[in-house]
Image (cartoon, rainbow, N blue to C red; front, side):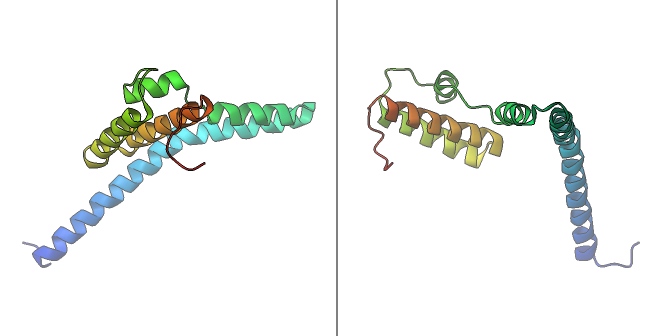
Length: 133
């Protein structure tokens, strides 16, 4: 039997669990983002040698910041082109709250980006969004 009190053993096992989660997260980050970062850095370096650094950098930024299309935003929020802004907001609120409780930050972020995209689209079409510009 261990000489440490039960609350210390539980605390230590929880800490180890959190350490493992952090290690898994770090490992996942390194697998996903480091190759992309290395590719961008190498592309920029080689482009600077050939005189097209600015264009390469702009292309890299464009690739990394893929803008959501209006069609994709409508699919995420499950609304049509004839849906009013108020209905879009109701759908957004429902999906955002559901993902805040039971979903993931990734899904919640997608829902928020979809709302932002449609907000800009409705504003451009002159259909008021009811939010200050």
